[in-house]
Amino acid sequence: MEFKCKYCDTNICIDIDQIGNDIDCPACNRQLQIPELPEETAKALQKLKDQEKKIITDEEGNKEIAEAMLEEPASKETTMWRERLAASFQAANLSNIKTDHEHLEEDDEASELVKAFDRMLDFISIKNTMAFEEYYKLMCNFGSSFVFVFGILAIVYSIILTSKTNNILYLITGIITLFVSFVLYYLSARFSIAGFNLIKNKELYFYTRNMHHAFGMINLIATLTLLLLGGYMGISQGSFVIAMLFIIGSIATAHAAVLFISPKVLNTKISKYEVSLGETGLSLIGFVFRVYILLSGLLLAAIPILDVVIFYMIFSLIYSKEINTDSLNYITLAALIISVAPFLSYLLYFFYRIFLDFYKAVLKISGNLSLFLESLYSEKDKQ
Image (cartoon, rainbow, N blue to C red; front, top):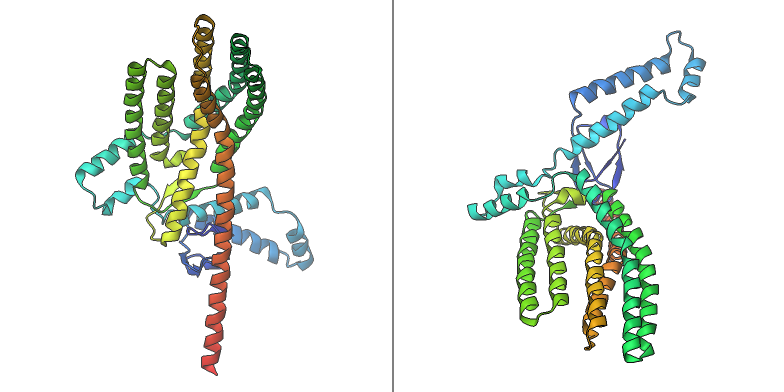
């Protein structure tokens, strides 16, 4: 039977007889308690043992028939009980870890005011992971489809600008923007969903208690700040473009705040086990990476807003004698960053996972080396 080490995620094979005992993880050398199985599963295990014993002995004592039966594939019932046994064992093993952040309050020494803020943040966190998955995929598909539209609007803008200034460089820039937008459309559509699946298929343990609340609060404050700055800049300078950029920034920080306080949608469990500072830092980095992988996909929904802005700029350029390309540069840069973010966040998380696997391999080598040295010194002492 296999289960995962709660510290380093290493798959460990154990025998049925080891249930209820303590073992050391072969990778990180930390002690793991193998819990007793639930009563229902224990009964299922006994039934499975009796069934196999019956096959081995055979009622008529015919050894050849028994061996032939053992060589046959396991029956559906046997396979089902084995799968249930493995699942029940894994659930029993993980139940010893207090992963839900509500259970971490029992020895939380923070003030009542801080706890009240934490409860407020929990109230606005995402509860329905299935609904969030549908929302995420909708935003990704909807937003990425407008990346190529942005390139079309950009080349229309550049054609009008070229006709007014007789500068062919604007037209060349527009053609390049159209080509790049097509490439970014493909990358954003592919890697936004790939990033979500990467998170969904790999669980993460976060060893820093209540830190996700702190990150959520910081992003909520940033949201309010960006909204106020956007309103002030838009009114004082009379710039619709700058105001919209600040609004997009506030939407990004608001989504980041909700993601930080919703570990379940990040396939992350908050653990109160004490680990080393390095492992705490690695879990924190992994948690932040997961937030920004999902955030990069959600932000694709801001591309239609940028399309509306550049559409507004096209009409302004047609009916205005003044030519100002700064706004176009800002909008194009924002669209470029948002479109390429899913690919970059996926790539960075990929390299993070490679480093993490390397780190675990080093721990495993050092652990095996320590065991070898211990056995070597013990042999010398005996001599």
